Amino acid sequence: MPEHITLPLPSLLRSSFPPYDAQAARAAQEVLDRNHQTYHVFFNERGLHNHAAHHILAALQLGCAPSSFAQHLEKAEEYLLNPDWKLHRNPKDQGAKGSIEQHNWTEHLGKHDWYWHYLAFFESQIKEKGGAACLEEFVFGEKANEKQVAMLGRFIGGALHPFIHTGYGFEFGLDGIVAEGLAMTAMTEPRFAAVLPPRPTGDKTASTSNSGTTANGLKTDEPLSVFSILSLAYVDKRLDISHHSDDDKFAPLLEPQAAALLNEYTSRWHISEDDVGHPDLLTIRGGSAGKWTELIWVVVLLLGATSRPGKQLRHDFFLMHAHNATLFLPSLLPQLTIASRIKLLDALWRTIFTYWVARGRPVFYIEGTLLESTTEPVKPTAAQHNDEHAAKALRSLIHYAEHLSHTPAGTFSLPSGIKDAVQGREVFPGLEKLDGTAFIRTAGQLLQNQGWPGEEKENWDFEGLGYDEAWQSG
Image 1 (cartoon, rainbow, N blue to C red):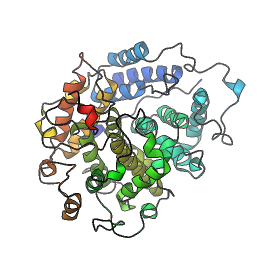
Image 2 (image 1 turned 90 degrees about the horizontal axis):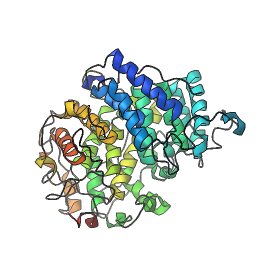
Image 3 (image 1 turned 60 degrees about the vertical axis):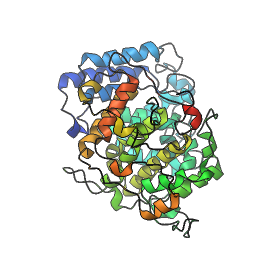
């Protein structure tokens, strides 16, 4: 039998939300434990993810009534978690096929029927060493990143679900959820290892391009902001690799030649040791807050500014996951050594960039889409939303807004050298007008597109919003 889920601790993001009471925490604990004891982290052979724990913990922090947690799991059981699926429920004869131990933990990676064995292994390791030490060893350690093991590549794979799931565990102080996240990582294919630096090290500059100049006269080893990198990538025809007609738009980008091209861009975002230090606990400034904030602005635009002006609002399923995953950096980074913090932050950025390219390099319509959206308050509504993805996105937006809603228009602009290089082909039209209302506007969009509580539509887009073909029907 797996270990029991303990009582959730106050969220590390508690500054954004009122504290939940003991009754709510106990109700959430009971449902989390039922899910933990009964259900696999996937709900079918394709490896689609069991989100029940995510939804319950998001709902807990958003202030849901204690009775709602069981309802969320019951909804998942009704639509997704078929109790008769063969991999659900810890098998009574688990020991018959062997066990996962320290000496053989790399031997059954990617085998979904070994989930319960990996869960037991990681629970025992966390009990002995602690969650932070296990994250360091089994995701960032040298053995964990040998070629066929590639645990960091697995951690950012699967639409970032292992990253998100493990982040929830650390955010709420739940070792059982951390163990689930590590077991999910072990179950995930390692193909996203292709977007990581060719020689992963704690020294970010070790993987940057050779010094030189581009055709636009820019130094290839000069560090750039994510806004500048995306602007240059938008006009680079070499990145027209994936197509609207591709069933798997990621696969072409994970081939060696394409991955090397992605690295030309992602390696321009340099991360120093100072960039991953601890931020001030009161002001949330300094240390890792600067790079985290930079990613926040990009991911909110991925979600709220990629619908074309005059068209129906649409929100990409994969870009939404990049947005939601970014919330967990403050919970994950403090668990790690400096070198591993650099790797984690870099890995998330590289995944975000790859998602954007795969989805057709959509323009960020700050003018025409984002700034035309409503600014109605959404916090009370978010707590009642029954779409787990929307609830998680709304929770993220509420937290981002608390720290960044004061940002005035005029804060952002591109350097003159970047403007010259793109020759008028802007990927951020209206960037100078971007302000702190971006978060509440994006939240309003989500409620309009995904439905209000009781009227949920689960209307996520899978076409790729950067492709012209995706918009031909309206």
